[in-house]
Image (tube, rainbow, N blue to C red; front, side, top):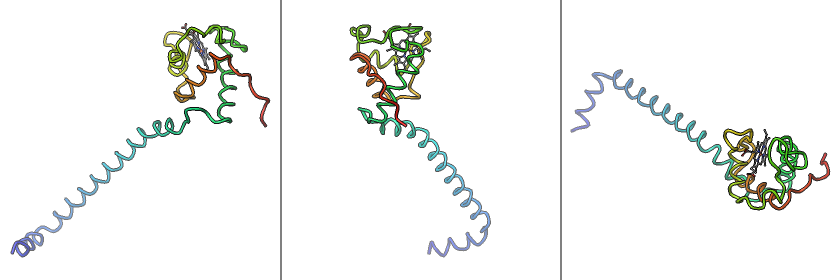
Length: 145
Ligand code: HEC
């Protein structure tokens, strides 16, 4: 009985019913799209971080050594013995907590020329560099082609 009662109602205003259904669908797909864009924005960096291994692979390790020698060296000295920035030698960093070194590398030190490197490095990589600096930073490998 209720189905029979519903039919004439739909027949009376078919276009109105369809329109509201369509606009409802449009609203839905719009929200789905927004959610997809948002989650892509949110998950993008997280995925990038998750992919970075705790210990860098050999090729990435070479790239990091090179970056420290060249980019960090431009301020901390080509031998990392100090320049605009302080020395980053084993002796100089012996008493500095590892986490604080890693944090300075990752976040920079606001108010000083020491820039953040988080655009170039994952947090584990910053910690890896800090560890290697405290051990005496390795030399660059012979140039790979
Ligand atoms: C533009 C110049 C500049 C560059 C490039 C730079 N630094 Fe620095 N860094 C500084 C300065 C200046 C300081 C000292 C900040 C302060 O006054 O506390 C510093 C401080 C540090 C410290 C803290 C040392 C300590 O004794 O607490 C670490 C560790 C460090 N830098 C590592 C790095 C690494 C690793 C890189 C490359 C990935 C790098 N820096 C690139 C200028 C630079």
